[in-house]
Image (cartoon, rainbow, N blue to C red; front, side, top):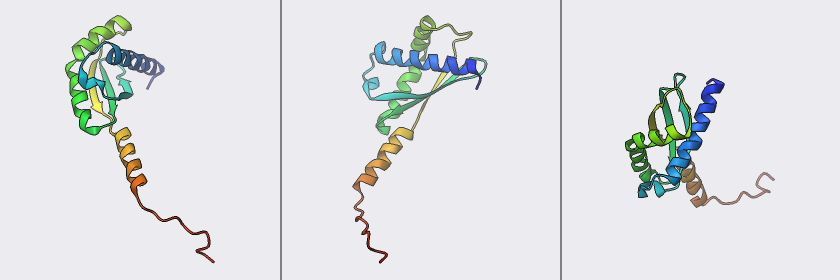
Length: 121
């Protein structure tokens, strides 16, 4: 990814966070969400946004709300940053965070006896 794409992706991510947290009033977006990755295409026509939600059951609904609000998001974004083109957004679920939390919970609940230091003697 070029330096220009990286800067644009970073700026889009900051603006999207601002829009989602402060300008959108949908109760489904009140879940703890994080934009884990934003990648704009080299021609600035498309932008892939990975959304992480702590509860995977809520993730699909959050992504649907964001996708349906694309027009509003683009209008708000247009006033915040100057891009050659306003990209078409594709919001996707990033399952990494939720999966990590599930694995940690499973590991915490395992009943593993402590190893004795003198087993080998």
